[in-house]
Length: 66
Image 1 (cartoon, rainbow, N blue to C red):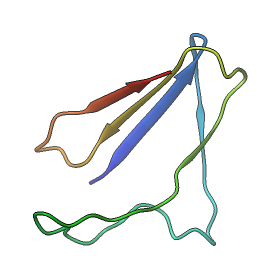
Image 2 (image 1 turned 180 degrees about the vertical axis):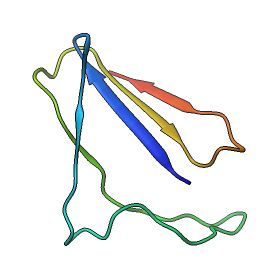
Image 3 (image 1 turned 60 degrees about the vertical axis):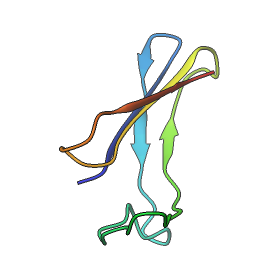
Image 4 (image 1 turned 120 degrees about the vertical axis):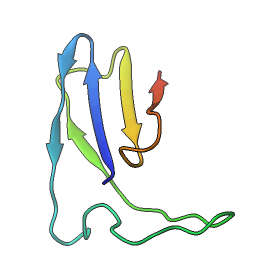
């Protein structure tokens, strides 16, 4: 169960859903393989962006800042 969140300048972002993009992956990704997909968030500012990604409940989150 992939999950993600984003915030910027102290405000939580709202996830943007686009049915044409297909959403997050639901299939198993084998070791040494990868998968790409789009996620989007509506944010009020581009300052101090933080994105947290959790691939599954069995894995630790990765936090990206910029």
